[in-house]
Image (cartoon, rainbow, N blue to C red; front, side, top):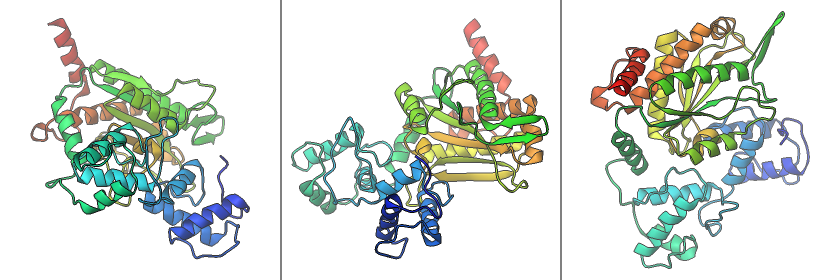
Length: 385
């Protein structure tokens, strides 16, 4: 969809304003259908609190988030629809409630999928209700009546951490999806200097290819979400679907950044999280490792780790991160990014971060100390034996 922005007018703007009013982010103004300064400010506030990119415009992802935010738990019956799953804030609230009570819904992503339906069915069976996976008035009453059952930590964090520990420290046999950002007609950030031109999509794919080779050499099964010359783009929803269908253990999305201010520089890494407390704790750990390894090994400015609720991070069922490695619009960062040797450094930093993810806490090593070549040597030695 075309982003709806400042000074636009019409029914779509009226709908956006209505949702923002209901969320108490915008003062009521009956009949108003213009995207004015107050509406833009409210959209920015919504994006801020939901962990979205803050640009004051309503694109496809912000619209889906607004549409989901209109629902509160109890406003409608919730059920599992295979063809068109129910999505909304009410679904996420239900998922978090079930997690608190010890039921495994996976990540609280706001999508009423089969895992949520199974968890609700189990709850209904245990409290003596009709086990149909539909959250109606009787189920709502039972949910309100019962308190949380899990103590001593967040249930989803415990499950994710236990799965990580049981998988063992080696990378051999694990599956990772590497996602080069943009692609096809979407070139991402593009910078031209005289006769030279660089595009984010090309640099991201080159970095992904370098990472693919190193992770494969360490024994991982590596899948890229796109090739270098696709004629059509790949949406974020398609990228997450690929990772979920492959049953990947990890997901890493690679981008470079851009800004109107040429002084903007550095690397930032993102993991799933919202302003309301939902997060992927293991994803947060991976983001921290990625950020520290890249900063130490490349010297890029540390723009830190941030929680975002982008669909790319929210809808993946495995720990997922997005790394924005340098600003193509910054002369200093650009001079590094266009050097193949620098992209090799970034790829090695990412491999080291992935390996450290699987080390037990007591066996972890200092940042920057892993020699990626030894991982490949260990695989070759095992194969020879």
